[in-house]
Image (cartoon, rainbow, N blue to C red; front, side, top):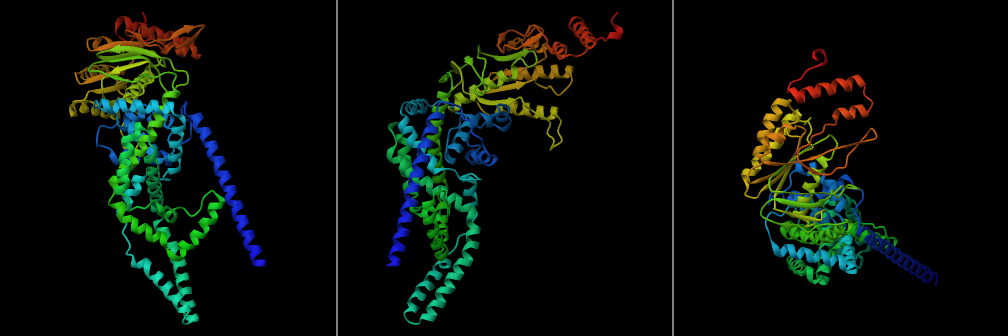
Length: 567
């Protein structure tokens, strides 16, 4: 009777834990849905660990070079990682990695069907909140791969040696033999079973440790297969093609059974009820090594189906990215769907999407733009704004502007360079290498180059800088290029007037203070503020007076004089 009471108490306790776990899961799900609704119409401010950011590059690195990619110099110039983090609303590794891959792989050729289909998807996600959240929950359950990208795991898996089935089967045979011996000779049967139990427990942890890093990838692949199956069953019409391809890929990967996730999954969870089951399952694994057996059986299948796994990961990532793009559109005060043309560029009220109170600027050009203006007047920010608009136009069809009409370009920049301490190269050497790669790019492809240069050749003396810079900028004005360049060298506005449109930014002085409206104006700059800033910062009057006199003499006479030879 006591045993029945104890058994009943254990059952009651287990049911209590299960019910409590379900209630907790429902509460977490409700909170997450509320979070999804709030985050849909705003930029993402979530913190990224260095590991997550590194893992996000996996798909891009795997496919790098298959088509044109934004190179590291340009990506860093426009603060690409920060831009990516702000737009990305993905909750799975597939979404994280595809979104990063897409941001660095602008579309260079027109495909009207794909363009229109994307617009339908973005509109659908905006108008169907319940369906959108349903898919976001599925992607969130698929989760992330941990420290490393799936693609890094795939590389290692292909190099991992397999194990013969006999290594795992002979302890099972001994176990059956031990059980049979219990009915013949109890002592011998117990000895056999004890040996198997001790051997399996002792060797399990060592074998498990050897494959532990790879189990993460298997867990993710199994969750991905499960997600693909669920997503394919409920896709709306706008995702019909993706759903059909997911079904086809799932069939080709049928040898990787989703039911195995119970055996290849982590040993513990955050749910108390699941932990009880996991504890029992863990004990079973240690006795049988069934998870290790399944791992090595699946290893061969995964190693020979990396293309299918990659494709499934890309499709699911693309679908979650579609949701992120739709969310980004709602976070902007306004946006333009790009219109691609054959010549020139026109942008109305372009803004930098990461600046809290941006100033909008508009322009229309058919040849390059040469920017002049005061220090801190907005030249560099403007260059980055136009570069970001072009990139987003050719990647996610969403431009932070009222209107965007332009060609499709290969995008390069040379803006935020610095000395290379590792190689010992000076700033000037780093700069000329950066510029040379743009010149070489023009010769590599028929697709036009769009480039952005901030203070060309700033790392050398004035005379040689102006001479060399004018020739470089003239080279950047060819038929296969469109260049935006900022400079402090006002001489360049005259030397290049025939091949560049001159624009400038200027400052305003009010109440002995300097203000910057950050508005783009036509024509070259005709004001200087470097010495004025020294004055406003409290530098000695004598220093200011002498500097202004010297500057004025040079502007009038074309040569430098100091205070000793004023007369």
